[in-house]
Length: 314
Image 1: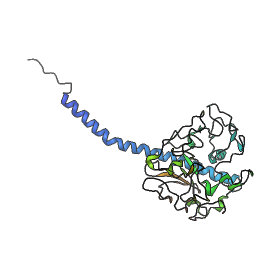
Image 2: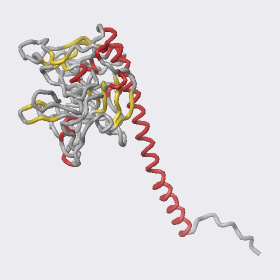
Image 3: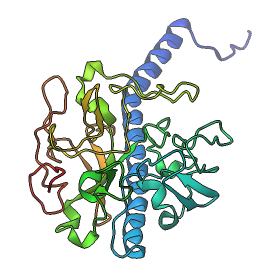
Image 4: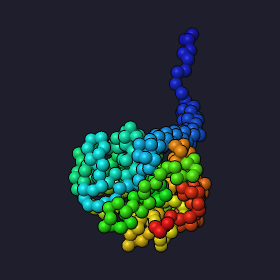
């Protein structure tokens, strides 16, 4: 009699059952894996904000208690500019101003004027960050220094826009000393910024625009996510006497916190700690269609813990 050999192959039914089980397991695990990735990115973002917080404190210590300005104003195609690692940088933002305190250069080829071009083909006033330190991992393509991922509470902490164009040091609200902040642990310094898309309904917001440096209008759509992201407007703004990121003849548009980490956005406070927050927890008022309106509570942005909009004559 012949000896029966053991079967070594699967039947079609067994193979289909195995595939079905694998598919079910993948369907169960995918949301968990996706959530884990998002939590990891949020944690990295918080770490980067805390590093910026160290730079914020050290900058004030090195500059007679003065907090960093939002962005130096444009006087002409060559000024303002400061010396950074690698050369001179034209119109530095708050992140660039803190370079030596943070200890990580933002640019690998800083440019001294608006018209000068770096090795990547980028003009001096719209360079891309070369270091991941200044980019949120949830939006890794938001690298433009103008349309960046992180916005500064410039209205209350360092509004260095000019009040009078003919006076190059007539800053609207700068210098501001850190000792003036009554509750540093309850005053926003930097946060994930949505940009001026905050002024538009959720379904009318355009994707982030990378700047095509051959087109002066590229990367400037007011309804695009990240537009003027380096500015972070507080919840309450005055559309007549106040300030916001977009003050153009084409209309007003304000920025806000961007809840890009699930249901929260990350916030750096003046004392250097960082946390995940919602629009509502920071005082923003959101319409049913997603528009962040002009009425909110400014107590977590004001240096005096006041629910008042910042205006030019105060």
